[in-house]
Amino acid sequence: MAENQHIVTAFTKLGDFFRSYCDYKNENTHLKGKWDTELNDTIILTGHHNGWFTKENILFAIKGWGNLLTIANLTAWLSNYPIVANRPKTVAVIMAGNIPLVGFHDFLAILITGNGVLGKLSSKDKALLPFISRFLIDAEPALKDKIVFTENKLEGFDAIIATGSSNTARYFEYYFSKKPHIIRRNRNSVAILGGKETQDQLAALGEDIFRYYGLGCRSVSKLFVPKGYDFDQFFNAIFEFNPLIQQNKYANNYDYNKAVYLMSEFKILENGFLMLKEDPSYASPIASVFYETYSSLDALKSRLVNDAEKIQCIVADGCIVGEVAFGATQHPNLTDYADDVDTVDFLLKIS
Image (cartoon, rainbow, N blue to C red; front, side):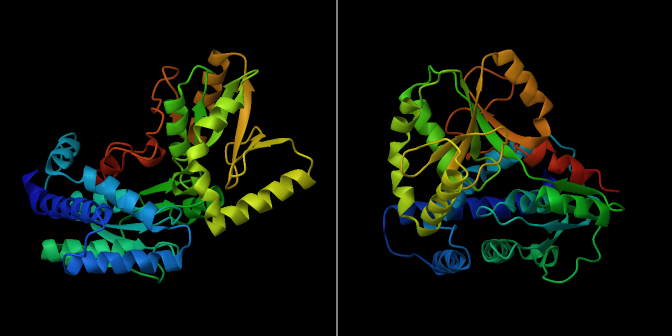
């Protein structure tokens, strides 16, 4: 820990700032200082770049990271690894842009292991990480030479972490095959319902489905329900999320996908802001969730094990190893690695 204590301290200060910022924003008090003002401006700018990145969702992401970036959490996380002083490596990162700060865990892991970041930002999220970098460099000037963002061809790096679609992943695999790499593909999250869930659990499932408008890999896009399942209890529990339909981009997707389903004569269930369609796929369009029925829980569990590379989270209650509690998919811990690939272990083994 002593080898990177100064970096841990900088991220701890960032966590303190995030928590403070979210606290006073929730209290509707006035901006307090330079960094508060700059973050406020950055959030507004980010919303202009990407209409899906609402202030509410950006604050949700910031608050989540604020809660994780404490000295206790960072120390416990890093205690699992043999972090020692060695020649720092430059790690390129091709960031996704589907939800706010989706690439922050990679950014954190690279810096906190003593390496440097060469980042290529998504055009959909190109202001938040540069702001965070300015804050960190102000807290720890030694980080100035360890953080570079570029819009040009990536060059001069020792390893790469790239996130994209399953199609772009094939390109990444070919192009970066000679470098140590982590290549991430499309994944989705699912929920297993048994019919005995409480209203509170189903309402919490609504958070798993609707947070970030369902655009994250940890967003539930598929339900598995027993044969004869009564969806009325599900629709009743998630009704509190109905204001989503007032968001123009979400409403446009709802209308478009509903028209496609109806013209294709697909049977759907809907409540005015969410459609349910029986479909074997895992990835559902915005404003819709796919579902399948099951008669054997054991057979379903075997299928999910076989499809593990397509799935990020499984929401359930006492059904399957590694399940996530209802309402918890959007609250990952530092040890919840994307695609179940230990990023810190990868970074420490770069030769």
